[in-house]
Length: 112
Image (cartoon, rainbow, N blue to C red; front, side):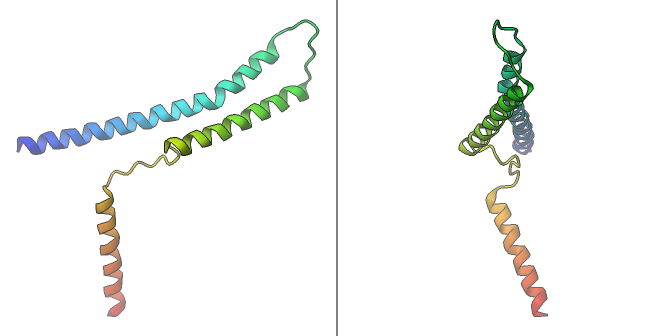
């Protein structure tokens, strides 16, 4: 009985860690997306001598840096395997068993 309680506590803690990891990854991705854009905004807000900025140049830089950040964020997500936000709670063998049993049930219904 004590072993079963320990296992249940371990599963609960594991899910809590997964949730924390998901939140941390989301905050990291948001930072990765908006940090370069805020640096560009800070650069264009400075008053340099003999530097004349237009609204068009600001928005073109903003779009370029924002697009580059988005592309790099997608590449980072693909490489690190964090693009899919849905973490599996069921083991693959359990999902496979459910799929097979669902198929068998449909097959039985179609025969009758």
